[in-house]
Picture 1 (cartoon, rainbow, N blue to C red):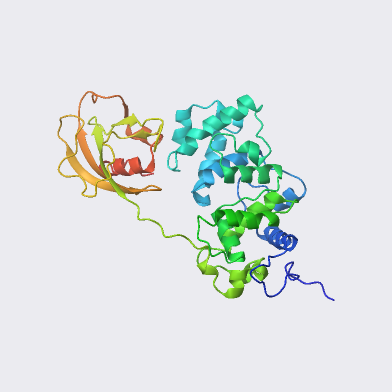
Picture 2: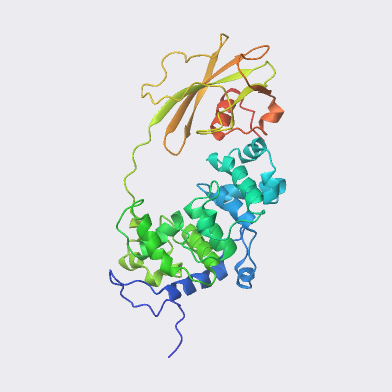
Amino acid sequence: MATPANPLSDIHSAIGADEKPHADAFAAALLAWYDRHARKLPWRIPPKQSKSGVRPDPYRVWLSEIMLQQTQVATVRDYYEKFLDNWPSVEALAAAETEDVMKAWAGLGYYSRARNLNKCADEVASQHGSRFPKTADELRQLPGIGDYTAAAIAAIAFGEPVAVVDGNVERIIARQYRIETPLPAAKAEIRQLLTPLVPNERPGDFAQAMMDLGATLCSPKKPACSLCPVSEGCQAFKAGDAERFPRKAAKAEKPVRQGAVFVIRNGKDAVWLVKRPDSGLLGGMSALPGTDWSARKDGLTGEPALPFEGDWRKVGGVRHTFTHFHLQLEVWETDMTGAPPFKGWWSAPETLQTEALPTVMKKAIAAALPEAFRK
């Protein structure tokens, strides 16, 4: 009898509700595909080297996984390379000033990740001899490392056979088993089904292969099922309804918050900046002075509470979306001599590029100074 070309061909042709793909065949097919089609990423060890026993630097794996949370690979690449140039090791990052790290992070969003970088690096350097713990359970105890990140580091950097579940993996498993339970309620079921599929050999490559499969072939819309290495065991593929999965609970409409920010200039295009409180949204970042962000639905009426008397001009508005709400900001501008009556600093045009400004603040400054962030 001829040897089947597809490693999943020993799986029954019709998969019932209580039957699952064979774990060894699933992993074999997936890894064979990964060996041929793995994405080339700056933080990744190519599969040929990985199979020979080469392991990536845990520091680089950790840094990349923190950056990749809620952020596209294309965006992360440049930030990752610049971070390594500035802080090539966990010891170097532990010794860095938090303000410098926040400046390097500006634009990546989800700024609590940046605040935790220093904390985590410091703890690894001071309490673990500059060596990251090797298990997911131990890694989870470090600042800023949750279940997913802990599993990813443990699998990729240390070869622990643990289930690594991100959005791509959820989609693959939901389709493999036609899971009708909508996300996020299905997360526990997905993890339970994935765990037996994780091989003891090459668990890090398996995790990265799942990520690559979801990012390339098993896409949310129009998945390339005919090219998928594990389609033979996929129940959604057999049913012809892969795009139905994963099921998702209806999202509540995001509220809109209103506010105002103040572009204060010294007559020479230098802008007065303040530092946001260390805790909370955009904590520790540089910002324009402004009002609180209200959840009023009627918007601002008349002028906002201006920070001091002056020749104030409304120069526009910006809209920005955060995870849980939309923000609509009016942008007001004035020129002054001296300094405003509250703590802050003047940032000249040539230094604005290096400030730890989140994207929403860059948008607001650009409403008054269109040339501020043009390269």
